[in-house]
Image 1: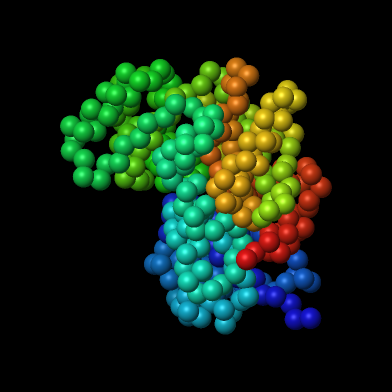
Image 2: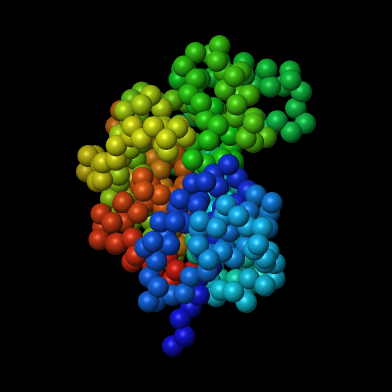
Length: 331
């Protein structure tokens, strides 16, 4: 039987493109070439797609031919997007693939866009009465400076310190700030506004534990044991995540049995509620015996420090087997 060809999409237009490239290189190393052929599809910052021989060619694409989305199926049978951030994991690329009738790995358009937009996702959770931290948000489009000032005053009155200020549509902890003094609120809002028009404020918790769960499947799910990010730094921002390397990972997390049960039940519930497909990572916070759902990452990283492959390895699924399973789940 003819081997299927997989098109690995990486790069993209977001500020997480470099993380995408690292994820792609790890997938390339672990790829099962006996089972599938692999084509590398580099999404350049100029918004063009290029077929590359290897991931190192991204430094010089001048000699490469652009490929049109209409021609995707001439090069591969199934797409594997590993394009983190805006346009790559928010349903935009997924919609393009669907328009061209290209089967692809991972979540569909609806679940990708829903889970990427923190404000909309939190409204969705509230509608289903799923426990989460208190939040508020503002859409800056059409707003005057006085509107922003009024919103910040609302945050000062509504929340206790610390407060987290986040761009609504951003991943990898980009643009997020922990506010421990309200005199720094305006600066945090300004930083978040550099990354998105919509800004979310979240109530901070007392000594929160950051818990992550990996999920694999469409209808029948493999749900990992929870893992924990043990933070030696003050806050798990972009630098902590990818540069300073001061974060330890505990797999599995040391949790009470009832906490594990609640986390597993919530993981399965919200994965299906959001119509997630293929694979995702569901993130929680645990504080003072309470479990809070934080977010769903519909396109988790595959870097050396990424939790998703670690969690799957802990349940007996190797890196290569994980990639094979994700490809098999594509539709």
